[in-house]
Length: 187
Image (cartoon, rainbow, N blue to C red; front, side, top):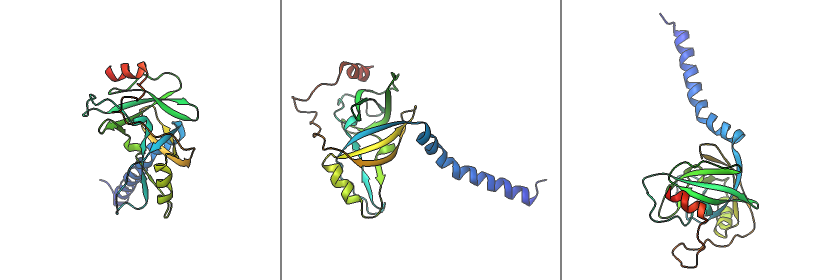
């Protein structure tokens, strides 16, 4: 028969495991994930109840083909080019990564990938407007850690040089994706 003290200790241990279980995956990703820096693009956030935060969307998720299956996740393969990571391929199945590559898992939303793991950044009171303005002028850079399962966590944000605007994918003068990206999208 279990004593009250034993039942209390089991309950306490269960609660501690449940609470710390929420933080352990983030802590592991923060220490073992690959650091990446990504260029943001503007998104208009609207929420009164969540406090000050900045909605983030990323250049690497823009301009995906309309023919992709919206019911499946999208995997975007990234490679470091200069100071930032750029998209080199995308597809609906987890890619086999080459050395120096990482991937982000997202969902498809009208020809763009949305990455929920790194889609919002909560800020201290009074800083939200400043970061939104930097993001809208394409100067906001997100530093994140990406894990082997294509999940990510934001480590911080910083101001970078102004990036050129992302071209509209429906315009005829847009540069095509590299051949590796096209084959990954079809495979």
